[in-house]
Structures are given as C-alpha cells and as structure tokens.
Length: 131
Image 1 (cartoon, helix red, strand yellow):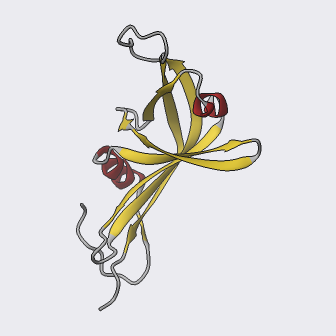
Image 2 (cartoon, rainbow, N blue to C red):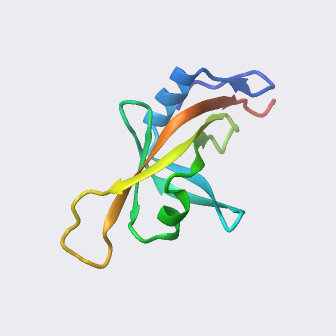
Image 3 (cartoon, one colour):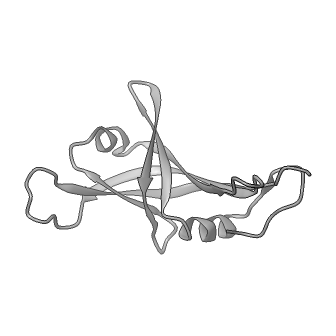
C-alpha cells in the first residue's frame, strides 16, 4: 500500500500515479447501467500497457450486453481498516468487447474480453482518522 497520508482532506492524484496504483491491484468494480439504473459489479482485472482496464466475462452475461460500446466507470482502491488510510482510483471510458481467450473446450461458458479505454482517470489518497 502507498504510504499513509496525514492530511485531513482527500489529496488528488495525477494520472500517472493513479495508473501505478491500479497496476498494483487486481480487483475493482465496474459501474454501468441496466434499464437506466446503476449497477456495480466487483470483478478481477489487469491493467494494459496503454492504461486500459482489461476484464473477462461470460459472453452472454448481463455485463457484456450492458457495457458493449457504452461509457462506463471502473473503480479500484484499498483502505486500511485500522486507520482508514488508502486510495481510490476511477477510470471513465468506453468499453469494447471482443472474443476472449480460448476456453477449456466447455461450450457452456464462452469468454469475452472487455477493454475500458481511459478517457478520464482520477484518484485520491484517503487520509487516516485523526487521533
């Protein structure tokens, strides 16, 4: 985790710092809409060399139907339960869906890849609770 931040406000981070934090985590939340209502799904991810957020999903899932070509948000972060320090990074961008990696031959769950290309990357350090 990044060093504790002692300010009493959330400190904004530059894009490079945000991408470095994202690269060090593996689970985040994709935020999208279903029937004009917000939906949030925890999901494993990795960061591409170009800063894209890369996900895998079942081909015919609600997630894939909802995000294909849509503007979505993705958030990841860490918070220390003991002192409240941590960070949060949000990526906004269009989600592109493409055929995924080869499956194990099981026809029941074909996979697709989802790439969220970053259009806006923001982040904040979370301060600890004052003593």
